Amino acid sequence: MSVSIGGAKPASESRRSKASPPHDQKKRKSPTRVSPALYLFPLPAIAVTLVFLVMPTLQAFQYALTDWNGFSAAFNYVGLDNFVRAFTGDSLFTNALANNLKFMLVVVIFQTVVSLVLAMMLTKNSRGSILLRALFFFPTILSSVSVAFIWKFIYDPNFGLANSTLGAVGLDSLQGSYLGDDAQALYWVAATQVWFHAGQMMVVFVAGLQGIPRELYEAAEIDGAGKWQQFTSITWPLVAPATAIVVAYTTIQSFKAFDLILGIAGNPPKASLDILSTRIYSSFANAEFGYAAAQSIIFMALIALVTWLQRRVLRLTQKQE
Image (tube, rainbow, N blue to C red; front, side, top):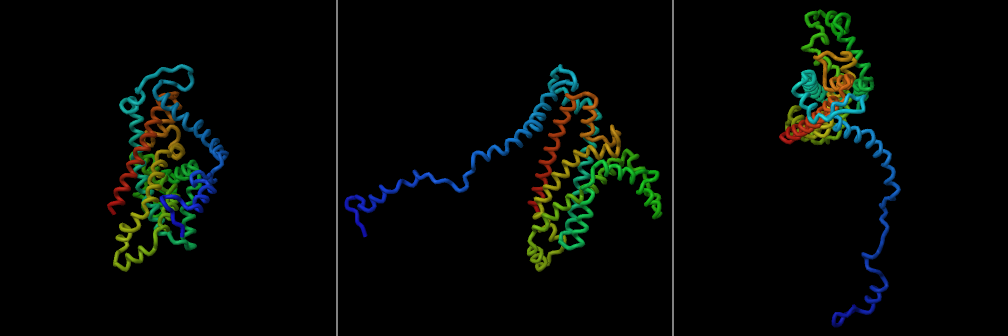
């Protein structure tokens, strides 16, 4: 045992401290240190994003303030006139906006419910469930134009499959003109959209449901909870991340149903089937690039707002459960 007198360090400790440098002066190479050359790899992706996404978006904001026709080199700045025109002086745009909100509401509700019910029925990885999942997922791999023409044939009032089937089973009173009825046409297209993508959203829900521990359901059954109580207390709160993905993705799909609408209704679609994306396309086709850019910005802002509101509502609903 070494003893220091008057605060002096023992000779052995003094020699040890002189022989080894201070700890903070050591330069140790971290085993996780990243080579600077690796930072070059994201550069192509960043360049592509800047050229094909960021710059066109910024240009859209610039052209939205002009009366540019898309061809001439000269244009005039008109301030916010294009935005004012969209909401107060263009009945076609407000009609398309109303149609799109109705279409989105129907598709989000029914597609989410249908895909969740299918997922709950096919959660187990049995052969039958896997086969049915593949069957329900199949429409997703088809192109939008193919789906549009298939359902255009089904909805045909003269020789379509829907009216033929209803007539064959004696339900002639339920036969209709479907797309020919302006009051119902949008909802029949919404039904097509649900059929088109419900299988895709079912896969997302299956992944979410398979992540819920089975012990929770076993404990709930022991406590005497019924199926509805298990759903409201276990399934719905714990499948929240999957629900948020499905609702957000379905909302964006609803606003982007451009090719489905054009395939079913032709170009330009009639007023009862006109949605925002087809209205913007018509503005571009009419050489109103400045006005179309303003409509596109409203379109983007609306999708962001609706998606944010949906996430807030879902979060509040599932917290209450």
